[in-house]
Structures are given as C-alpha cells and as structure tokens.
Image (cartoon, rainbow, N blue to C red; front, side, top):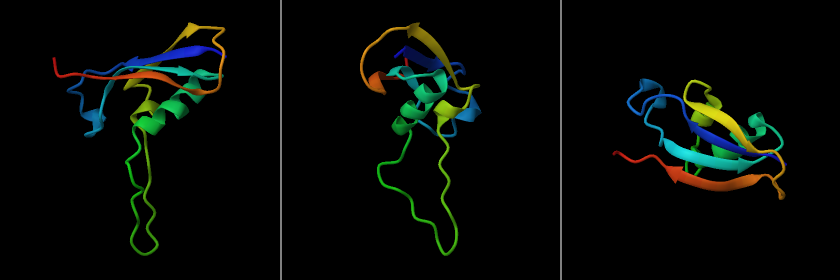
Length: 94
C-alpha cells in the first residue's frame, strides 16, 4: 500500500483555512490519494461532535478535502501495513 505525503498548498495566511489548524506535513499509508485525504481528515475533527438544534445538522468539512489547501504526493509505492496516519507535524508560526 502506498505512502502519501500531504503538504500545504496555500500560504498560512490564506483565508481558506477558516481558523483550521494547518499541518506542515502528514504522511499517510492508504490505497489512493483520495483515501489518504479521508484518513488525514480525522486530524481536523473536533474532539466532541457538535449537536444541531431542532432539525439542524452540523456539517463537517476537512481542510484536507480542499485541493487548494493541501497537495498529496506519493512518496513510496510499496509500504506495508493498514491505512493509517504514519506521522503528522503541525505547522509552526516561524
């Protein structure tokens, strides 16, 4: 199963981040680039699910789903193991 490196495509001051926490680099083992984005999206999920009021539903959109925020690059075609986040490095301010 391939390893994928997910890196920011947008500057950290880009308004598309919408107060989301940016990551400098995330390495994911997954079948495809799309599945790597899905696995990495767990890093964006709030710790506890938000509850809607009445019949409202609370939507979740990960920054990893946005191709203008993150690029996905294959780094190893033959890594062994299950689909998982191998490493994740938060973006710093400097």
